[in-house]
Length: 498
Image 1 (tube, rainbow, N blue to C red):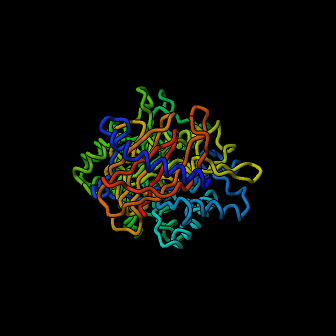
Image 2 (image 1 turned 30 degrees about the vertical axis):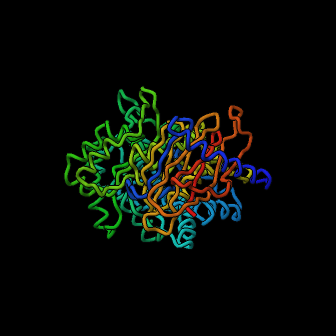
Image 3 (image 1 turned 120 degrees about the vertical axis):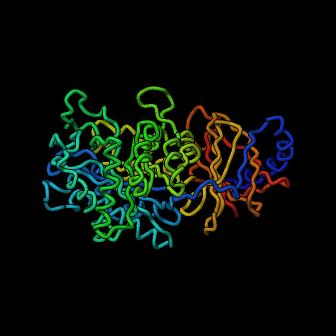
């Protein structure tokens, strides 16, 4: 920052502060609050998802590698790994690993857990080592992307229905991969998730349910609420027999929290005491769609609240959610997952994407990184917006209570919660003009914050600067314990306690 501008900025801010505060009761500024002493729930962290094989029907002919690490030089791979897991990077605490359908060809056949997962496993092992190196922990969840063809009634890739005679085979398919990750690869696997958007029954032929072998979508099999309940219990038994009692089972991942809550899945588990007891974590994708229609998906906590009435200790994770426009509205989606869906952790959709490898074009093209076919890569704006959140909400912290009297200015906060991390809060301005905000900060002793900011770059905004997790200096609370701030249009600002 230019020194002259820096000085002018803080002189203006100092002179403007008492005037702005005096006007808050007249609503000349947005009134917001953060209370670090009001802890809503433990926070498990933000995460990352490296997707390798997602659509290949015949892997021998089409060795899909969507994450793109195969194209990079080793030095560039290491740079990206540090940007994700390192001390100065995102510092993620969660990792998702998909489990594709190519690991077994026939009933009781040999497992091949390596051929289609080379870069997935590389990413996980390297990331785990970096995380341990900075004295932190990593929690891994693995999700069944779709079973092998022989497990379905249709005997085709993406077959719609489970063959009832293959229930044990499906259980073994899940358990053997978990054993491999935990015992052979030495990875900190914590959860096995039953399906990826398997609730969406309209993805297959609704007339004869023959299955769709088309390449236009990622893997799937239909999972009814009853099947989810049954396999929570089956997989729990299988994991225990394999000496994996410390690996939990989740109910799979519906497309959004509305479907989890309203399509019968939460109800079915709540009504089965054994399944409820054996479930280790609530999971769903957190995609948001506010317009009524088939794809409607609000950030409701209804289904999660139902299960927490009986098991208050249950945590909930978003295991995929959009990067949207990699902008302030995307941060509002995170806010909705945290404060409305009441989750304990968030893992967005694929953070590293090689666009040419997604058949038909990725419907969620936002990301943190793009890998180009010439072996180069770029760090996208999504990385920096996500960094505003991920560094603030570290594992072991707690979601703190906030408020904001403007729907375009959501506030997110994380309490240190007896960890080594610093209290932090995030102010987002989704408006196309700068906004004045006064944040009433409670529940801690310090008086100053160090701030970082990322801004959108678009013609409709008055601010012409383009900031990417830029340090903007220190901010002090006034005598009333309030932080006065002028938030630029299209900006996200994170305040860390000094």
